[in-house]
Figure 1 (tube, rainbow, N blue to C red):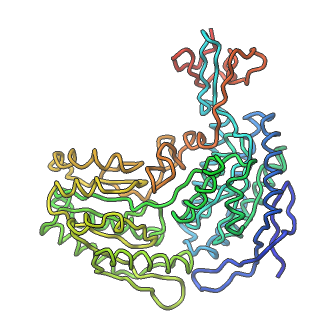
Figure 2: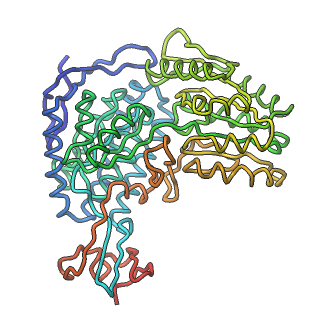
Figure 3: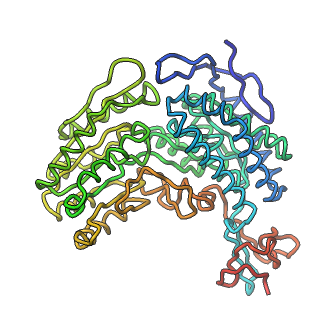
Length: 526
């Protein structure tokens, strides 16, 4: 079987491969027919140089041109919807409907169109003008390609050639080198083909979008730390992310990571008095969505120890005994088993599940564990392990002071939630716990499970370490996500005709917001 081609510098071509691999159908545990290359260091170097040249060309092109490309790409994806859904299902076992076709695909095209609108409107660049000193600044392109490492759990909406990082990087004026997730290389190739068609139709630089499938670890470290690279966006495991971060940091290259999160849920007593079964049902539904393979899955629950919380736990345990779904791949079985073993070694009691399910498809039994607040506080670090599946740990705090101590001992997370009485009976307890939880999470929720991540300008899909590598940025939400892939360009006493249109006295669109002498306005400079 010949190797699938890579996309480098505007051409689909045979790879200078140093290895090969196949994707595996998780439902059947059998390899899929196509074979993909592992790219050499020389091939990666060529992609980087082509990406750099594309970045130079892109600086001469208008935001309108970028917007047209993103919109054309969204339309090209929709034209390939059937093929994308079928192949993604084969490579990931994620349901065709509603998950892939009705949820993730529309989300992907929507965020591309939101990125196009932001590029066209231009307020994202935060143009700032000091007329007295004639100093002007704005966010602009990085000057080199952005490398995007996509995860295995969202082949469309977070894909390296289609997802949020891709959309944000392009909209900010940067080319992208997509490093496909090896769990769904064919799906990523289909996206790259649609992007290539769109860039040709809109007259964009040939190397605006390039595609590699896999590289050896040392080549990956070189990729993220290369002098020509602009930045890297990574979504994946903490271990892989930190190794890439170390390489990028040594070279002074920006890297934005989404890595690990247990997404703590604090269920206050009044919520259980009021709606115990409903909260238990919401918890299980959130834990089991996508077979627990969401970065916002609630893997850690805190309750006050009493009869109601024991009844709540019993109901949750009953729900967890349902049949498990198919995981994304064999690696998922091993990582879940390892995480559960480590939780038990740290003192957690296994109540439900805890074993691989034999038969067709990669499956691991839904798993529920428990521990006392006293025992959790003895080893808090060891008990905050992300288990990427339907796995959750319930901590029973002996009193509100211990619940506060548990909140204070948490590491950084993408999300954190408090469930409370709708009539206000928990308000005093809420005020004691929420301020502690607020500093530990990127997104704080009330009475709502965290698995849904809306593509909203107000969304923060980020958080303190180890959820991400930097607490000040989001991977979801246009235009905020674009700022990761921008550089602050300052102009001091530069003549009007030499300034970018965004910083000239006349507002280039008439609607763009600019900060002029301390006032946000859409007006021209007086």
